[in-house]
Image 1 (cartoon, helix red, strand yellow):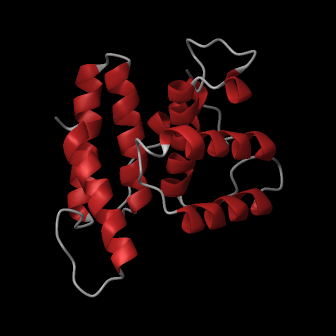
Image 2: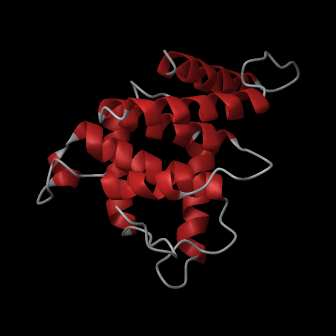
Length: 176
C-alpha cells in the first residue's frame, strides 16, 4: 500500500468514532494512552490543518501514533460502527501503512514513537510477517531504552512513571 504525501487526515468525526471504539474495546488490552496529551495533540493537528492534510510542524511521533491507533483499532475490533462497508480483510491497513512508511530517523524520540512501534509490531506479528515484526520490535525496544523506559526514574509524577512502566512492559511482552 503506497502512502500519499502529504498525509491526508481522516474525517474528524470518523477519527473520534474510532477512538470511542478503542476506549470501549481495546484499551483494556493495550493500556498505553495518555488521553489528555493525545487529545491536545489531535485537536492541534486538526485545527492547524488548512487543506485536510497533516500540517507541517506536527510531531512525526504523534502522527505515527495517531494513525497507528486508528489502524490498530479498526483491524482488531472489526466493529461495524467503523468498518461497515469496508473489506474486512484490509480494514485499517491504510492507517498502519502511514505508520510503517514514516521513517524513524530522528535524533530525539518521544514515547509516541514507542507506542506506534508497538502497534506496527503487533500488526506485523498478526499478519505473519514475523521477520519484519522482529525488526520493528527491536527498533521499538531500542527507542524505549533510549528514552530510559527500562529504568525507574525518581522525581517524576507517579502517573507519568506508571505510563512509562506500562509501555516498557508492553515492549518486553511483544518482543517475546
